[in-house]
Image (cartoon, rainbow, N blue to C red; front, top):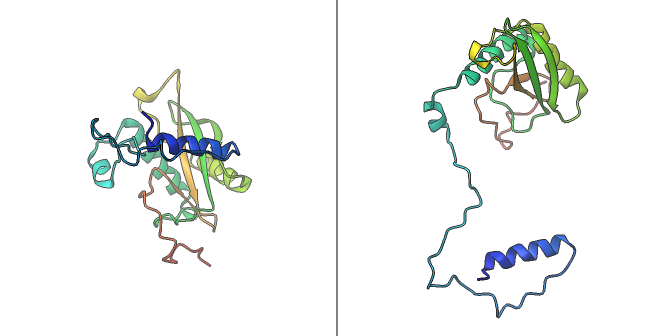
Length: 183
């Protein structure tokens, strides 16, 4: 059975291919057939988790360790960290993979994601190095004598950052004006 959803999908494919679809509207049913049960189509298939649900869920050892490391890095780099809500428009987001040994010594840093600001990538790496050694990871997280995890740096226009593991999860409203760079 051809549904309006099938026709729309075919039209989109043809439009992307640079073709003009020729649809015979007489063949397309105007509404779902009543002899078959209607099924709801949701564009979002993953479950939505709101702040209240995630706050009540116990944190994993990984989440707890990342928060511990983030607090440690933030404390050692206090002059470069901002504590308020991340602005709606960030200058850069840098994701760094950190590898530590069982004592918390940093054995490797690797940028996983960046938008090309080499100075901010280096700032993220320097902030980890300045905080080394990091807290020792729990034994249950160790694999072959090391532990790897990723942390995200949220950089504002002024070059100050916040670590994602400590961010409150809500970014500012671009209409409010409070998220503009501080001078």
